[in-house]
Image (cartoon, rainbow, N blue to C red):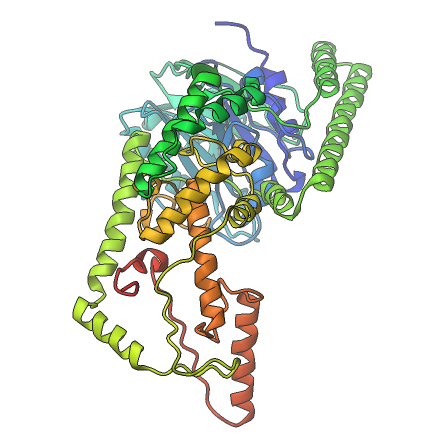
Length: 634
């Protein structure tokens, strides 16, 4: 087991976490195998951990975070790359308290719910792979303001400890108890120690942990437990509380590795692909009219060319998280800072401390300047869409949330698939639409005369769209070029490569699109998409599948056919004035803003005329999926 520099690594995340200093007062740190556990003061300003693999900090518990659930920006800034953050806000809305857990993504750590409730202290139970339970406790000091009493805390804590004593796994309690265990003759201290011993626990910290000379921050384990291998109380630096580090005997999880099967387009010669594709064009059956055959031929042709020019390779790599603004100057300055810190820790001289603090401030300045330069350049070169994506990342709004279930990824995907399918099937089953009633509706619609006040069209003109019009290569080219160069993983060719070779592929795209439109057949090969479950609101329960909506990423050819059809449908609806006047969605020059303006204006007009207004809002569940009935088409 290699030697580990406790102090240097314990301070990394606190200084490097991109956190707002005023929100976090104390923290507890844990590290696997030599499980480093830290408790310290307010996190200094805006620093992010550039290389978690290098510093090897595994778990951190934050105490008295003063964070509310809606402060996603602070939560995001407190989370270094490659880590997760779980925040439990204080029940009372007084701006204090709160417990947070920051841990590596490859660590199997979960927050364990408990039925025990109390107002005298806060706690959080984090279970490490069903083997060790870490219980973080924060007991606020009793005062007239909070109305807490030490005696009530001891009573509740005794009941809480009795429940923990029967847990079959190893239990480690950490946190700020605000009990002066360094004064064993005090009544509350004697009572506290009796509670520990009677339930088979022991307290390991004997050194001073507070600037006023008391031991308030504790490390408690079972009496016969050898989970804790070593621990230490480090010199004060961040706040009025000192740092406690400890090491536990637990297998360290291996680095996260991923097996990647992909084509390395960066090494491909584009001119070689274009030349070979031009030679193989004779293999495409341009005289065929079956969209399924044409689509399969296109996939086979492009795949064979890519396999020859840019074959699929399989490689394994360790997942590393890098920050784009982290550079060599910052890396060198941090190395100097750590060397000066070790020097100060050894000498404890004021001169060495000043030198260390000066270098620490230099690192902070370099990081700040680098981040300002990076994001200024990024915003100046971004379009509106990319700019919003960057802002959402900074505001921690682009995080991916999935259920925390004890099952493999494939099983979770199947759970989502079954849920989304069953949801739509149930809704459709409850919609009482029969073929006969649908036919009646169509018959009634055919007999209705269309009035068109905005044009001189004959009211009795047949306005049915019976067939699509074939598109020219120029039309298809315009449609393709308007699409952004995004690619679905199911596509044979990436979109950018399609656009680069559009003069060659344009004939194929036009043939497939027109054959699909004229035959009314959508190719089977395009009836696939990648579904991503996206949680509807960040404050919803992430373990409830009903709180997710499916977002589909379709193949590029599918989008082209869809656009070619929708353009003709929209043109037809506009020409014959068939559109809904009050529709605002998917309508040119309309949006939610125009809808709100219309509703508000109507309400005000009716109120001005002395009428009572009732507003009824209807929300159709899975509206797009349930709209896939064949009857409206007929």
